[in-house]
Image 1 (tube, rainbow, N blue to C red):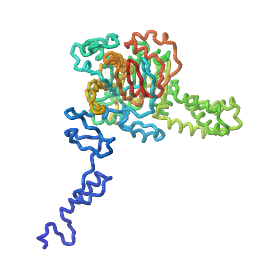
Image 2: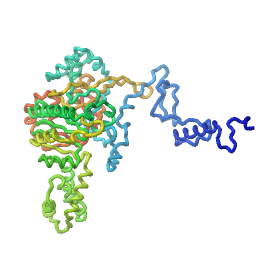
Image 3: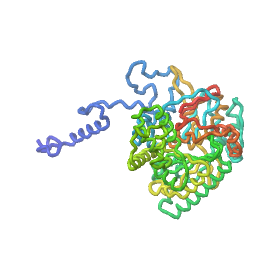
Image 4: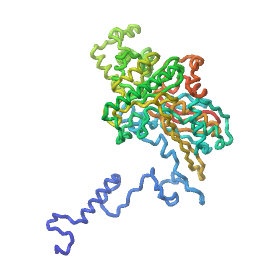
Length: 557
């Protein structure tokens, strides 16, 4: 009997091979589909695949479709028509990419969807729509990708000739401004348009390491990991790289001071700094905006004598002051601690001075003053809670920006000491050339697709721009599209999130004549310069969607 039954084992000490295979199959099916019933039968049907992914080798007519009410079923194309292509925004739509990120890092911002892994992707924020206008506000954040769509083709941006590329490079180096009519009849045949398009894609970078992606730097360890870094263990080579970086950084600041460079960015692995020339963003002096900051960085800047302000903290304080004026005695008792901590964070007042505002309001006898130890503990807790958040943005003005320059050059924590970015100097981004810089171009590609509308399909043309899209580049591209696309297009903007807070108002505004003085030599188009001199109105948000209809802009932030 033992020989007649294959795999027989007395006492069932060795189960048959077929039984082990069935057990393995059952476990695999349970792990693959935990929501399905247990795989007790070998002929259990597989769960239907997710609707977000479609077999690229199947046609739309024979592709399986989920059952549902007729009003929710997708309508089939008419007989003889070409099936719809997958819409490009299915892969690039900011509302569909990583909706539940940054909640782990910032639980207190659970009501706002943000990102933790890819900081350069857009986030879902409360939409703030605008009314139609002939110009959109300046957006000082850096975009990592811009997707333009229009009903008119972008053939004029494809396959530039060698002569057109060379002419675009020459126009950029000579700061040549080109003006176009309101509408161009044949954009594909316009050589001036194609050369201006090449000119608008140019930016300058330092250092230049072709095998590494040097922007963005915050959260880029995963992309840089595994790449060859000869300097990570060579201190002599690290010193050479930092010396060259210091020369380039100083060169950029000197150009900025002479108003030959409008602005530039310093991108480290922990924070980003935006230097703006006097006259931009409504400021009459040179400004530097740092975001995000930490308690250690702010303390180090104070120790070096660098004066800075926290505009978002000041804004919160002003709102609290208004609440104090209408609050009851018990409400004042619960709110005075927060005001005291903010004043101590920014100005370092003594105990007596921090409560002088109570005497002015006449309520000093109704409130019990906390002791010095409690104030110190609350202050430290508030400082730590503000770290790495938009509220930690710091603004440096005037001559303090030169002190900030020296501080950043001599700061040892500016460069990572471990990890994939160890020993790698910060990235310098500028719209104009500077010492040690390398000319780079943004990547552009046009895509044609069809979108279903009722029972037919409309042609949609798109132009995708990838790379560090700076404020001047965004405005220049919109000026070109305004003429080439006949005043009708839309754009989805993907923001590098740590730079969105750069739109915060940095201080009082000055007259336009004072701001535009001598800035005409900075290399920007006059219309672009006029936009960047305006006072920022976006607050700590950035433009996510930009649309033009009948030569009028509307946007959402």
